[in-house]
Amino acid sequence: MRLTVLGSGTTVPDPDRGPCGLLLQVDGHAWLIDGGSGTVQRCARAGVDPRTLDGGVYSHHHPDHCADLVPLLFAMRVGPPQRSRPYPIWAGQGFAQYFERLRAAHGTWIDPGGGVPITELSLDEEASAALAPGVTLRTRPANHSASALHLRFEAHGRAVVFSGDTGPSDGLVQLARGADLLVCECAGPDDAPLEGHLTPSQVAAIAAAARPEELWLTHFYPMVDPQRAVATVAETGVPVRRARDLDSLELPRLTPTRS
Image (cartoon, rainbow, N blue to C red; front, top):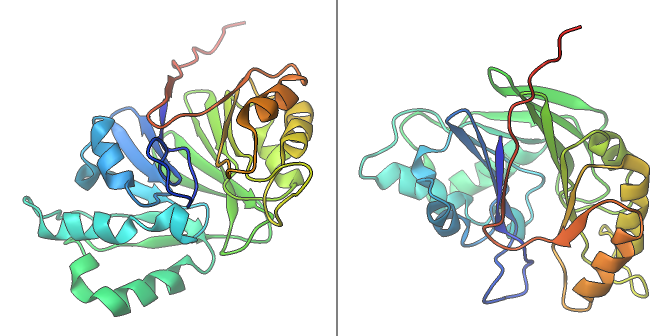
């Protein structure tokens, strides 16, 4: 299992950090997780032709998390070569309606040959789906809007968790327990928190309760001091750092122990 950060920034233009996006690779398969503007290009920089992706998973449908869906599907449509297999998407309830509005605006230009089947996941309780044999997605509702979910990906005894955009959330704590990596937003400062987002002290509380093996902070708005945020979370004893675009973590397969 390999996770690559394709976008560690926000909607605020930054020459070094694009809007949110992650790339998950397992056993020759690859999925795009979210995908703000510029994600398609950064996916190619990470060594994966985005037209060959096995699917997409969305934490929610705000533009800084899914603006590149239209360019991605357009690239699959026009080729060359034109994609002939489906591009499946997993997302929270309401995403299918959102996609139909995109289709109404762009027509067949965002219909690759195999179509775009969408699996919607509950906004009320934990849900799960198989992305491929041996690769499981587990979700819980996030404290945000636009059909927001927390995402946990499991394969070969490993797990990576993505907070998506969220305020304080017991669901995120539950999903992050036992995770090898938690990629967590940290959008607002403690002295001026943003509704539906986390502050450094709130991320620290999640880290202290969930105890992931490692934590990467992302999605800082300019009013947050990254160094102070990292220091605040580090007080929990959980290894933490600020994520950068194209950071990558490879988690080797865990071999079951024999009794």
